[in-house]
Length: 199
Picture 1 (cartoon, helix red, strand yellow):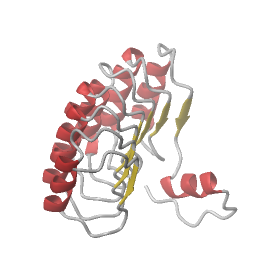
Picture 2: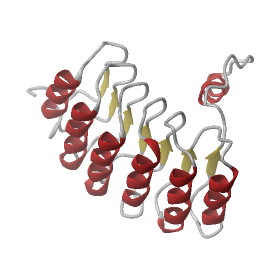
Picture 3: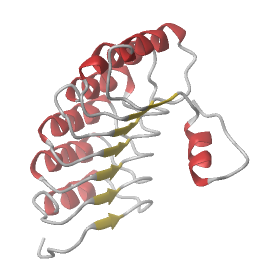
Picture 4: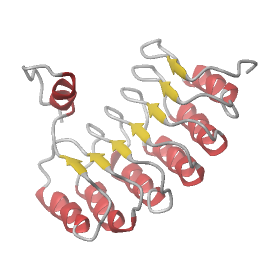
């Protein structure tokens, strides 16, 4: 709370639970410099994510937020969506390997019709099927900020078709990935071998 220069905070893989995350989010709520926060591979769920949602509503400097591989469910995604509606600085949100489901994706999609600054969203491996893809398809024509969307690999043809129909009326999205989260990470890092096709 007393630090005014911290820009990067990486707490990946530290077993942080809801209470820990709430404490961190509160301390950073009006931090004047924090730009990058990584909380990947921890052990928090709904309550911790609600605290992060509140943090997004008040912090004016955060630009990149990594929340992969935790226990974020639909309620947590809804809290994040509420934060995104009010946030004007965040441009990257990674939610890979959580449990937000179709309803959580729908909430995030609606928030992105209001938010104009979030440019990159990753949601692979979150139990997203037809309803979630359909919600994205309906909302994406009205998204003005999003540039990169990674939805993961799907075998829900009708949902994917609705998402692609929505893209026909979107003028800002530049990258859309239908790809295994694991193989995508390996590609990004330059690895030659894909070791998993987790859905």
